[in-house]
Image 1: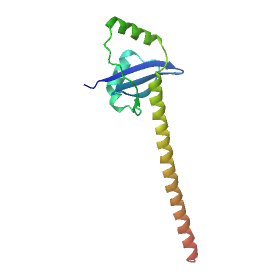
Image 2 (image 1 turned 180 degrees about the vertical axis):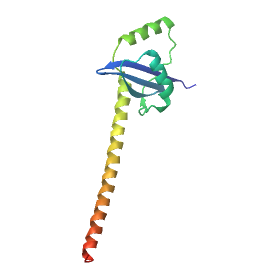
Image 3 (image 1 turned 135 degrees about the horizontal axis):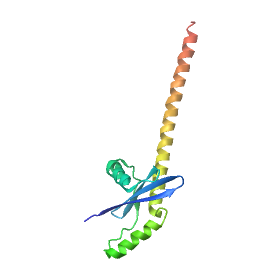
Image 4 (image 1 turned 45 degrees about the vertical axis):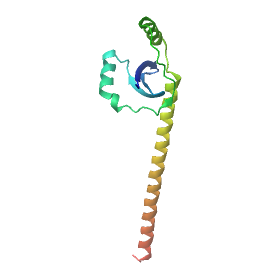
Length: 138
């Protein structure tokens, strides 16, 4: 049976509060970064997750091992407390976010290049039309 594990890490990255959604499934990890602005309350985070989770743009999946061990609840609670004390984002999620950023950059460049070529073609057509009008003796 395939399991999907999703987590949210909220931390302060000057000057804003940032949340990183991490989803691990089938040995892959994908992440999404969200900027909250002011320090979000727990109920605000809950509302945000309920309203916007399906609209988040997750990064492409990066391969990562997913552990399937069952942990003692007390140990799990200690680990969670330890994670709350730590700041920063896991390296796998950072890689996933970086990959997403690079893909967006390439898409933006391609879109800009296509727009430039169409604009140049339009300007060239206008120049040619103007040139033909001059030769008609008007």
